[in-house]
Length: 601
Image (tube, rainbow, N blue to C red):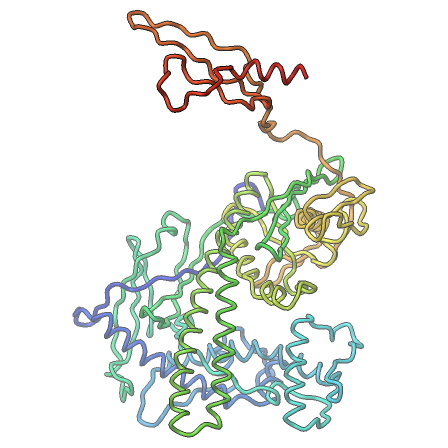
């Protein structure tokens, strides 16, 4: 039951860093550099074991088992990755003489199962698309079954893999390929997801705006026994923006190492207002724009039908988009240069090859730094955009925000550079940030179909004209128009309001509306805000000001200012008492008679 005071639970992620580390048994402090070293040993063990297990499972029978979803006894595989791996007998192996606790093996198998389960979908898509692939022409035949269709961007990526495989195999015809045929097994990331472990490996407590994590860490790079795994108590500060929020549970973090040292990737569960999607009457449509990150417009559903003022709001990225474009160009240049040096190093003499490899390492380091900087800017851009849209929606009384379905959204027709720039924008990150920010105030974010949102009129559903170029839109029949992104926002909000009762919900995804319905959206003439002040023409005072003499002071001769008129082409004469000035004119005639004579002519 959803009411005005009802709440719901949602999970969110944040990051923090430990500032204190002590040995849990003795209480002796541990330096943060020593802590990073011991965590690095743990991550090396997990990454090596995960990579070995993934390579061992990289065969078609693995994906067949995952597709069936049953173990050897015919039972359904559980959702927990480490439990499913234990039932199937998929256990990691370690070098001889190294002791690793069983809870660390749980972490390894959970991460491997998450990666392999994600690739199971790609394996099924490659198997289906390879049957429609022609190695001679390098094209895909149209799908014959409705279930065979996949997003176009995903299909193009698989097509490139099939073309590369065809070149390696000299164009040999193969009716059915698997993911194990066209790509190598992935490498396991150096990360320790402690959520798969129990209290024997790690436990987390929160008190006084601090998180205390107790975890077992090795004391050497190759621990030989149980005694070389000791508990360490880490203390980290809870970020300030989480203070005062209704958080009900703190989850075990994932440990990673970056340039600054140990980083916690934490998750928590909090209570938020529960929004009723079916009762929404005002929606905000967000259209992704190639020139900026997005634009928004409002549509309302009332007794007279759908209405909108067709006056949208365009997001100002504060110049971050230009900076991202520059960094993207720089990263691509570094990649091309490193690739060229790699080709030269393949056939160079040994002494030249060593020099080229040093240059390649420097270029790779610079490219990685550029990528890190782009990631930070994208995160800042996404959350700033989400906050702006959420504040605008809350101020207008909206209960729903409609965004375009990113799986069917492709940027085309703007040139190679602009298409690539728009494809690499932080749209998906902005959607995640928007869903997180809007849920805190009880606003639901839904995805709607994107096709035709910028090309069709919200009133009559007919194609729009472009009288002023690409960024304008106008419907001569409905007499509405404006910025094409604002018109698209009206269309998206309309589709959300019409399909709100047919939205489908999937775990881990936004509520989705699959079909775009149409209803006319009239232009609202309701006055919702005060009339803005407009600049008026200010009349020029043509009468001469009268001088008021001051009492007790010898008054000076008053010289009036020249009249503000377009006819004032002659400069005024200097004061009469200034006979010795260099500015003395030959003719003491005032400007006013000249102007009057010009008017009379």
